[in-house]
Image 1 (cartoon, chains in turn orange, green):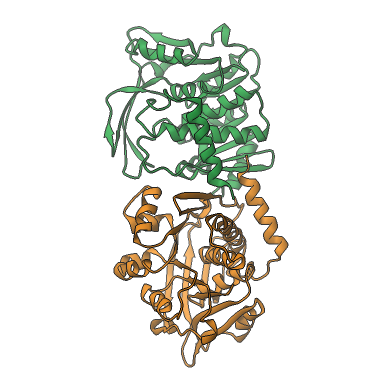
Image 2 (tube, each protein chain N blue to C red; image 1 turned 60 degrees about the vertical axis):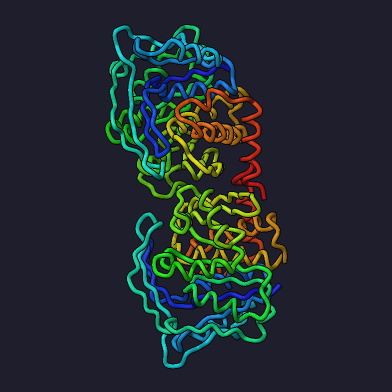
Length: 302
Length: 302
């Protein structure tokens, strides 16, 4: 089944205790699409870049079967740029620079050929743009997954709550689930967030794995214990891409299938952090992914 | 197989966002013994209390099949007392009072009838007392499990390292594993801690579950997502008691059995936090425990 992914396609400059990069390609939608491409054909991208964005990077996406018909290229403008430095614990980071550039007036145009998409991934963007995408689809997709972050809770909570009413699955981290709900207990937080709209909630806990809530059930996915986390940038988006990509590939949104989707998303995220940026998730084999999923399975078996 | 547990038997006064208690019975060895008693007969306690300790509390332990022959009662002295207040997140707490009392010169005497114990649980105590217990056993137990805390890393690291050389399993939390090893990655931390002595390491992560490292393998146990954590006091000791109790009951220290032991320990800990102090873990049925273990199993199945 075809998947539509909306989000940023951007440049990042990253510093970690292991090294630093110059401007490399990043952005939520980049990670989502690459990750999803391992599970489903017909991955369709809606995003915006400036004319500084390299054609070969677009070709790389196309080689992964990703349609870039919906990627707007703004002449004379620059792509979104983010620079950040991770602390030694790799769980916290400082933003060193944010240049919105083309993102400042992003108007998400959905090509006619994308209109039949059954799975919609709303990557982290302003809640208003996320809403606009849903409104511009002639038919409601079978499943709408939305990612967001604390930043929007701080400055656009009302818009965010409106958007939440329109989606099926929300993916956020544990601190964000607590902020959004005002509850410390994640079980209570999930109940409040369900009441805001999303029937399903994925709480991403980084090195502690992820929790999936829905249909009165809870699924706990482990994280793969890693010797080194080289660069966590994009891990959450890679997770989301693997999650929705797996669901689209199987064309099933049962809770049982969502559990597997959480594991496949976690597996892709565990690759993502092994190298800078998209380097690792650009070059995975089916064998790599299946071997990693078996590791997840062994990790929790008793 | 018989189990010997050494640790504190004490009074606690606890404040949580849900309420507060007067002096109630606590102490690491109390939790360890009660928890272990659900899995193995012949649980033997070595500890010290003052003459302020109620006889009925000792009878309660006996009713659980726990031998208190090794519980020293010091006339004219007071039992160890700890008072603490948990913060709203229940993950951090302030110590309001610590009165060592009888603990100040605790000399762990092992009754002759305990000498054949095959499983030894060293609850949190000074590393020197933990060493003394091992030295006073005529035969080395089949398995020695040791709990400790950051406090001893701060003030008695050399003694702690000596004791670590003598034990098979260490149980600590994630922050303590990082402090002890100087490594942020828990995988790297585990390698360094293995090199210090313990062939097996359990890292307790509270609401995020636990990790078991040993024999080149890793097992990830979930925590049960709870609506309310009423009182976390003793949860780590209850975990340790369930862990070693299960191993002793099965009389198997294979890695496969240790995985199950981690789950049974986690199940007991999930009961512990439901009420103040030992209230909940004093009154469990086999059915309660088995139902909870099934919940753990369902939580990770995919």
